[in-house]
Image (cartoon, rainbow, N blue to C red):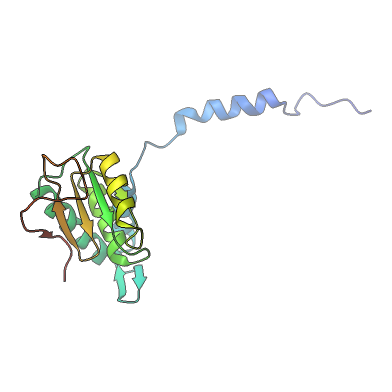
Length: 162
């Protein structure tokens, strides 16, 4: 049986190399940070496409900023949770998810095809600040309501372009 050479790596050596690279780890980035970098590098490249057409990264970012600003104007802030009830796979869904994240909030998704009872349960358990629906409207949850699927009497705020 051949003897191993002194240069051969041992499992301990491999583990040490990984630990030695710990300082080289890139700082954490959010999904919105990645989007901003992609917009800067490829503004006119196609970002999202669905049956309604395509959006470039520049157009996507403009819509994300609009949604985030509208949500902030409606009182949504860092640490809030926003329910999203939209059809799967639509570009409006992705714009809304990114807009919620850009506003500093977390999104709580329930598919538009799911039963209303599921939406009430999920949004209630998550204590969402409000819900964005497939119509592109954000409706704040009534502050004194135990049922998060029930919303304030105020008119819904349109956050997506018609």
